[in-house]
Image 1: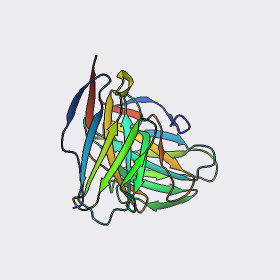
Image 2 (image 1 turned 90 degrees about the horizontal axis):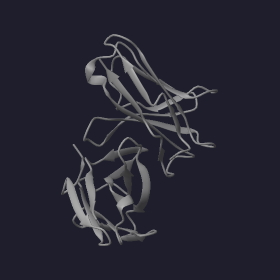
Image 3 (image 1 turned 30 degrees about the vertical axis):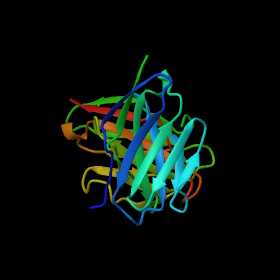
Length: 110
Length: 113
């Protein structure tokens, strides 16, 4: 069936560097994508979203890039901070249902 | 996501007992969703409800699980005759309308012993 998946399960980044988290999706009909951040013992926190008619969207310290040709999504975090340590999920939405990937654990090295 | 309130946060049940998880959506939100998360996995959709209506329950197990969102009061996810495999984090989410941003609560962690 259709799925959303991530290239890497873990990512370690030096504090202050930029982080890039990648996600591949397989449902070419998906038209809306979201990135969530989940800290241990907490619920997913909305970070940023993007619709399929866009290829880039920027927020505060975060940028999402969408490449529909290769069905790839990425989340860029600028100047990574210790508070960015978490598991990051991409999700696609269809008919009010979110399909999540398995997540990437981002660890910040002091 | 602090606006979506879930309780209890942690629940321990013996096999065969019932578990009831409650969710109050954010103020002004009439769309409620339930998701389940197993350790080290992503969230899996269970059910989507609006007030007094189940819109999509395609992710709900056929037996023992039920959900409701009454006209008054919180949404309830009910698991009857729990088994160890039901141990998971159950997240509720809400949105004001269809197609809008979906915000999650902090989850209810169910442990079946």
